[in-house]
Length: 540
Image (cartoon, rainbow, N blue to C red):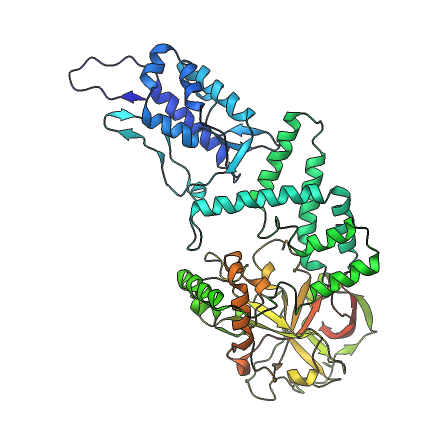
């Protein structure tokens, strides 16, 4: 703490306090603005430690209530480094002038030797009071990315409390499900012998990676244990939604069965029962009156009532990885999907020998040069689906992969046990033109999707529409943001009876191809005057 001298007064002795304040801010910006989470340790006695390391004269000058409050609130801030050790975010002898170097070193030593007690978030744009009256005090100006923005459903303190609770659940799960059990679960999920295993593979890989990091820390003493605790804090603070809820999720069901040494057939059967799309993450009972009232309040606070209105998607709504290069201009009439006989002499496509390959090879070697793709419609029911999107593009995001910076409210649906070609306006045996190949919407703006949903694509087919569609909102609770988790039962009830508009104008309906689904589909691809039939017998 320092004061501004009054006009005509004797100037105070320069204790380089301003340099000390600048050093604290500089240290903070150097250690806490790299995207790392901030945590705090016990800090009740830190101000006494600070004063005790100063000379008596400086201690008297710095014995200030405003600075004391700052140190009590912010003095214990730490970040966790790559070595899993806590590092003080404020204090360092190297960034302090000589008069304050001993005090800064004492604070750093104390802070870095104490266990983390909580995640730290603050919504204030200035931490502490830089000036009060004629006095200058300890304070920080955090960069924008460190200022927490409360949601309409959770204050900053509620957000911190939830993350701290996540840490406790994660710690219990790590104890209950040791490394070898998690390793076995991930290996089993990767075999793709468990129904819809891709939905939880991401959570399993995340948990296994955390176990590996914990096991890499050698030793059994307090220092090693504190490093492990620090890693768990970081994992909980940065985990995707629900990943810390190991015990209550599907990954917990699998881990429990493996820990209990159940035979493979029992594990597979129990997993399939719980992963059934009609059951997984879907409420099993109607919402109560209280649930409906709470859902009304949540949606009103979010201003998201309009977000529930959905419509069938058009090609302009989606992000494709392939579209035809020879698409003729056409009308939207009933015969728009038919191929006109416009080839002149010598321009007939030459049919080559059929080829069987994986989807991944097809995507890598065939799609880049394909001019036209046609789907050979099978006689049996298969996984046809449709993409839907927000009817009101300005409505607040409610889908996990949609956000205000990069809007993407598109989802898709597919019938669980497949559906016949006739339901989609297709005829078995025909070759229907593919108008686009579209990956899962969750992957459009990210490098990879933690839930492994990236392993699926939709082949949009010309003229295809879900002709028997009547009701259903085209989204599942598992698609929704974590903010809506508490009202998912009410939203599920709403989704069953809601109607997606624009069925007759739909342009993104067709074959859904996924790693865990049925393959063996055949496509006719034209490129450079050569036409080849490709059968995709497996994903990779």
